Image (cartoon, rainbow, N blue to C red; front, side, top):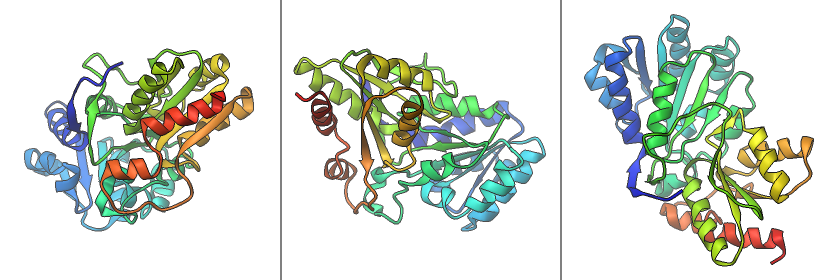
Length: 315
């Protein structure tokens, strides 16, 4: 798999895809919480003002209203920043959305340390963990704008459960093409390998692909797996790959506590012994800075993935 195009914006794609879907899905409604220009849902509001609701700085009301609209049969997307969409209204998400299993699509932007200069108050690195813990909630983190578009299209017709869709602020390299298809609980083997398994989610896929090239130059064959569906996670793919390599690295723009790394370790601990190294935020808050500088400081780089792979292999 190759990085094939100039970096593009997931949130721009999100806004444009909602507008496109609004023409064919007359029951599609979009809610925001005073951040519509940043999440790009303002585009839907301009095109369909009667189906767009800005709830102001009131995230609990955002989720409560989204629950009511979903209960009325609407296809509902509720958006804000990841920090505000997962933390402030957690009780409303748990009791008003997940407990009655209402199909609200909570589509958040500005997740992880790639939020950058806005600093630790806005860098949601715990959101996957707290969403994973709620019964009925599904959790998704696309790698690029193409995948984000296909997932939003899929979710517009999805009514089986609540969903937490995690989008990045930064422009990300394009990896997928128009043939991409999303399915809950399915990972994607980006590169075949035999020595070590590298499992990424979200924007970390392009870092994992960088590591693949670095390791290949040293004669190490790395299997690269992208895991857009974190809950449910693709246990079958994890076990098949780990059974082959017995060495696993996870890489995520999130705390290593409760995120992708934890999900992978849970699968392995109950089914298959393997050596695992989790790469992500290690029980700490990040700093303010440019995304790439933060990735380097906290080890979310191709070079660090390759280094940790060599340590696992004792090379």
